[in-house]
Image (cartoon, rainbow, N blue to C red):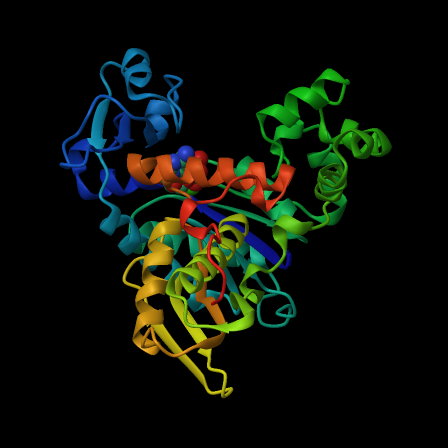
Length: 392
Ligand code: DCP
Ligand code: CA
């Protein structure tokens, strides 16, 4: 059977790696939890993920550790090993690159394979994906689930149906039979709040959503239209090719040439802030940061830095940009323009709850981003970026 798009997702990823590394954990309910700053395992925080053995007891990702202990007192609670997860992720993706002409990595343990146009070489992508699953199991030693379909959105739903350790193919004609009876929460993009609000107006299944297209759009606007597209097997905005975004940059030409350091820094920090929030919204992180300046003579200077770690905070972003600026500007000559650019962009690692500090900061960034979407960018801003001085 030839279907062009495959979606894959490793089963209970962090927990499976822990079980692979430590044979004593195999076959047991294992919870991978956050650690405190000293690296000690702690009883507070949340469960990042748990093995399928633990899921039988009702334990879930994101659940507070104390609650998981109550549900599964015999469970094994372990801290995670990030380096190992990155290593295992690379092993799996190496296998994917070997088999597929086009691989899109969407997360550490998840991605799409696109076999469009490969009918002659791979007339049966379902058997091919069965081989891929075996190779991952034999060479990497963890289970993987795969979904196949004509679009990314349906392939992703198929993977959900395939879990754990399975493969499900949904052909065009199968879409109606298989998708329509499913609960709406199977559609990517439907969170618990949307699910409840649609359930309240009698929309419970994907079929109900399709039948009530107008009502859904009236209630949810553009989001509703995207849900309708997904429900009918058409890729929507969430499935656009993110790799097409190569860089995100902003620049400002001053109203007057300026050598006023406070003014220049406030402009730079503002530009950083804008770039940072755009990255956040697109779920991307940058591995390279550049700052450029233009002198009144129209001479341009630029400096870039490859970052050891993706920058997670807007203030880190601003500090790095300030350093780059001071490398190309002697703080005395006037400037005409200043710009900042984030490039070498990669998908953000979703495992945010793992490091408490990072999770806290991500929640803050999300809250600020939501406020700005509702009330405009100026509703909340860092004191550094307030332009109290003039160019001269
Ligand atoms: N993760 C996390 N915090 C979350 C969700 C996930 O830290 N709220 C981490 C742990 C997971 C990994 O990301 O192992 C991948 O997330 P998935 O949602 O794919 O979940 P799992 O791989 O654990 O389980 P599944 O078999 O359902 O895919
Ligand atoms: Ca997974």
